[in-house]
Length: 121
Image (cartoon, rainbow, N blue to C red):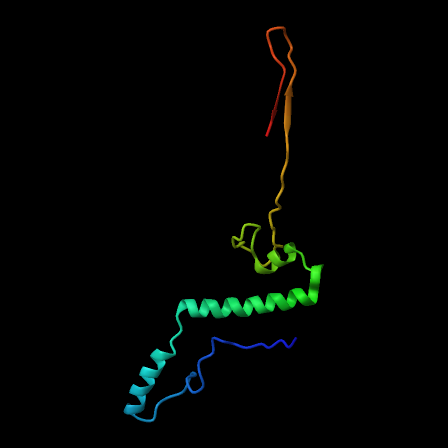
């Protein structure tokens, strides 16, 4: 499989920074053409999402199961719920762990008018 890297957010040829028209007629034509090539937020989002998806798919093929979610969350500076972590330069990233517990609290009757029960949750 050939992997190609491209940048879909680059402007079309001749529409880059520093390209100017030669006359006023050319400037009007350029303005009309620029409207045709304007990027919407959804177009940019779709292009970046597609490029990122290709990158992650290729990385998964190369690395296999060697990369776990912990290093990925650290690299993206996210916690386990997808929220941004505020990281200072001199501290390690602290990613909160996800834990689950099952607790049972037993009460044994101490007198004849009490009952024994278990509460779990």
